[in-house]
Image (tube, rainbow, N blue to C red; front, side):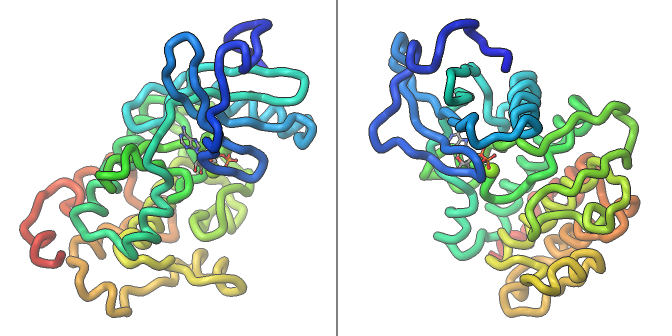
Length: 286
Ligand code: ADP
Ligand code: MG
């Protein structure tokens, strides 16, 4: 673990803020910390080393190394890494507004304009990751999208690069094979166990868009979940979709396309009319 300060540990520079638990992941707890010297608040991902296999340790180091190189206004910024006898600590920007997941639950669903703003930002981030960094995130979902503040539901930052990888060859569209992600959001080519590439993130954006606009997930639950994903078997049949414009449905259709070769890229999605044009349709259907 390449620590920023060779011998310093987290508590040399930061205090934990009482009651400041921000979230939990499979193996981590994220807590609010105070930088002693400046009085600024940050978020710290705390990972208990005793719970990690050697492979998981390597994955965590890879996550921190990759995140440290990223520089985008809508990607959570990593500032410092520390390691002591028990924990890895990853200090990041504190994002105050909580998960997009909770925001959707609280609102039931987003109107088209709000959904469009969130998705446009997400596509902008993917444009940066895919084209400028040759990185595939592989775990795009509302739990990993953080809201910047409580007042505005559309300002977001992407976090959790635990499954992210850099492609060796930036032009390579299908070179990854690892089975990873989250069941509701995983792309069909990953389930089919064929080599895949950056297009898997666009599929997940399709699922997130569907959930934002309707309040429910497109492919149902197990046991039919995997089959539904592989066949891109979803519909716009329920009442929820009556209030959504044809452009919105068309946009989702281009993302939830089973064959990754036919799925739109981040670049193409950014110029789709639903994203690019501030049409009056959005108003009429709200
Ligand atoms: P895991 O890889 O274990 O899923 P995450 O990096 O996703 O861990 O962090 C777990 C949760 O902690 C997130 O879903 C979010 O709720 C919260 N969280 C993560 N990073 C931050 C941050 N920088 N600011 C505020 N909350 C955060
Ligand atoms: Mg996570």
